[in-house]
Amino acid sequence: MDVDPLILTLRFDAESFEHFDAMRRRHFPPARNMLPAHLTLFHKLPGDRWPQIHRDLAGIAAQTAPMLLRAGAIRFLGYGSAYAIESDALKRLRVQLAERWSGLLERQDAAGFSPHITIQNKAPAADAKALCAELRAGFAPFEAYGTGLLLWHYRGGPWEAAGEYAFTGTT
Image: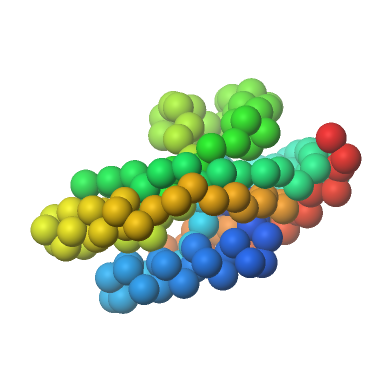
């Protein structure tokens, strides 16, 4: 039985992922950047419930169509910056999963959802403020697509793949 927590993220179309990940590699402090770019839906699902979570995700992904995302702004995180993501479809999906897993969620995951893709974090405050100002000055909103869900084991370091669920629905 696996007791390490699970993390659920959104999978992006290839072009958008390359953009987000290149920005993260360029701006995230290298010694702390152990992960590719991601949008976290749930931070800590119970690893011992993997079979149930897997079944739920497979069923939901089969009913979910790829979804339009809008990177609408640069958000300042205090010690970094992120793309603020807008998507009614993504918010509905997150609510659906949160309701299904309400008894499994810890405080952070039971709280509100503010979708974003971090491109810098844990940087010195002055560096973080300067990058945020630079990114905002040249920012124009753009579109991306969510194409599925990625489930990860958290084992204290880089994440380990635990499942991939393509959106194959039509609505």
